[in-house]
Length: 257
Ligand code: GLP
Image (cartoon, rainbow, N blue to C red; front, side):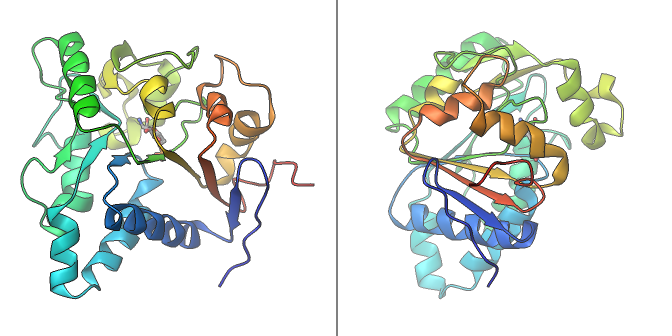
């Protein structure tokens, strides 16, 4: 076991590395699913080891137990690129199918995401928010952290009242996500549909997962500076159910005394 360092506000676990982080997060996802909570799911490189650990956990269960969990599965993803959807190699729909849908043999339509191919993306954002409301909102919201402080695709500046919507991605986010598009930031779609901070902050529990040293400074600003629109993740400090799990390198700029 790696040493974990609990902090009072927000509860923070610092794990030795990304594998230990993934294991912790997979355990939280398993618990949430087992207690019938709706999962808010995220994409991005941070989530790849998390989903591998989650799949391994569920696959290790006796078949009946695993089937029970899968049959009660309810999840909503944070976001999708406008113009991309099911079957597009770079879509978040495809990322989720590869990471969870196929390895867990989830029924079609189980993993809900905004439809990036909708003819009217603005209307699709409204429909998706209504679908989430009708399902009773999110129980456990999993979040990664963008290098500019975005969560989901809530780009700075962003206020906590922002709702599910269609927006234009920043140049830095298109650069950050270019690797999945052959390294070309121009190939990254210019727009996306994202749940807003309002829907994220309405979740019962928010689990922010941060790994790698490049995110140390933005994690410090998110947790230890006054909330502000320039760092969208900083509004998470207002959430009473916020939990943070980071590896040592991502936590290296935090003041832990
Ligand atoms: C993407 C996603 C976010 C994700 C973030 C971090 O843009 N929309 O939901 O948290 O970037 O990505 P990564 O884990 O690859 O650093």
